[in-house]
Amino acid sequence: MTWWKELASTIESFITAIGIFVAGVWTYMIFIRKRQAYPRAALTILVDNIPIPDEGRLVHVEMRIENLSDVVLRASAADLRLRQVVPLPADTSGSVLANQDPVPFGRAEVEWPLVASREWQFDNGDFEIEPGESDSLHADFMIDSLIAVVQFYFYLSNAAKAKSGLGWTITKMHVFGTPEEEDTMTDKKSQATCPSTRQQKQQKPQIQQPQQPQQTPKQKPKEKK
Image 1 (cartoon, helix red, strand yellow):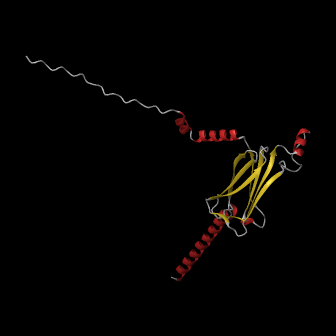
Image 2: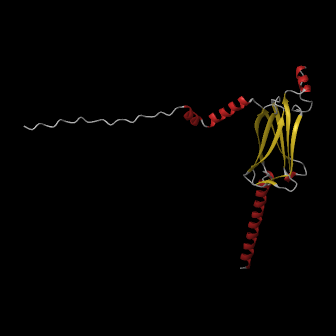
Image 3: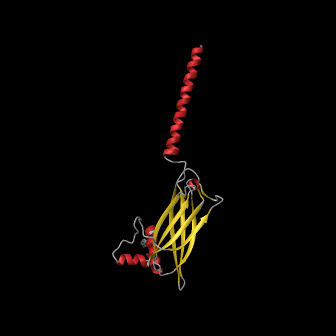
């Protein structure tokens, strides 16, 4: 029965080799080809505009970060930049009036002037987001009320790619409105999300009058003869 044991051992080794090969292919497809060993993030910028009479405009910015991957997302630094778009800078306005392209050669966007910036440093690695969860960074700016349109640029570093300086970025244009326009926009949003509730508020409730029970006519008693 020695030949049978040798055959069984050969088959076992062959199956083990196939298992190792399949595991290697699976690892390559999942972690290398699809890069699932690295975090993936979705960035969203939310802006609150608070006009302050005779002082300017308070701008509160929330940078929402969502971890879309199956691994922990870690960041070592972040940077938020606020740039002025309208009123147009003098050089950009001059290019437009001269019928020239305001975008510099070799670039794709106008270089809007920087108004202010905010930076975060996470040297101890204290900023991390678990898979499927989200977190936010917040910043405040006080700007001139004459600034009507701004550009936000946000960068979040990827600690897994810290040496190369890679990370996630998002750029957003935001138009400021007057307080009346801001209220109107908020009102429109509430109508879009809860139309039935708003209609119920506008309509006066109708009070139904209680119906009086119908009386059955009584028959006169018969007279005794």
